[in-house]
Amino acid sequence: MTERGYRIGRAMTARAGRTYYLAAGLLPADRRRGVYALYGFARMADDIVDRSPQAPAAQVAALDALAAGLTAALDGESLPDPSLTADQWALLRSLAATVERFGIDPATFGAFLRSMRMDVPGTAEFRSRYRSFAELHDYTYGSAAVIGLQMLPILGVPPGGSGGVSYDDVAGGAALLGEAFQLTNFLRDVAEDLDRDRIYLPADHLAAFGVDEEVLRADVHRGRPGPALRAALRHLIAINRDQYRRTAPAIAALPGRTRPAIAAAARSYADILTEIERSDYDVLSRRAVVPKRRRVVHAARALLPAG
Image 1 (cartoon, helix red, strand yellow):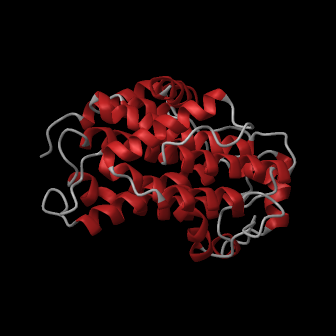
Image 2 (cartoon, rainbow, N blue to C red):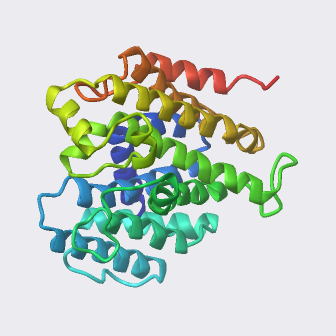
């Protein structure tokens, strides 16, 4: 069943996480499978929240079942909830094997599921608007930063640090890279998120350029960003690029056998920002996508020796 779970995770990554799938291909096989298990679990939870037609109460129940299932899998117990499908249970078993194999902190999965509940109306954690980056960090820590932390043991970073950089500094860079990926998603998915009645871009940064919810909805209804929203996006892209820049020392410190995968993913994801700029910041009528040929180039360059 564990092997089946890895295959399911691989298929989910190939289908929905093309950048991650290409980058994972640069990892040694055993570590690559760990990425598939992590991505598959995150996608499974995200799909419950974002793509399920269920009512919020049913979404919460489904998230609770996942949490209970992961606990059971980690403890070596049998399927705890009949609402879990055979595919879900297989993926949870492969995730538990990954956690044990690489020594991933199980508490990070609780933080991740808390952020998923923040997207579900009616929960104690629910929030659909963020006044500042400080408030947004409360969400992105669980939704993105902890995934960077989960990746560190898979990437072979020892407790003492790597490449002359302390573990805490590498971990800080890994968490920041996860949040950079997340902000890139928020920038390109403005219309999709608003359709779900969510605004992840910080209100204070939007307001500095004259964008409030009324302006944002008017632009979405028109199908193209106005001057104010374009200016706000330009500003937020600069912040996002600075996040990627600040992750460079941590990426450079990763072990040589795993560094190319993360370097390729970071370059490909940051390139989404270039696509947004090339469209004159049109994140409302099209989804910025980096062509596969450029993602392959990023992967190839990541394999070149540094220097």
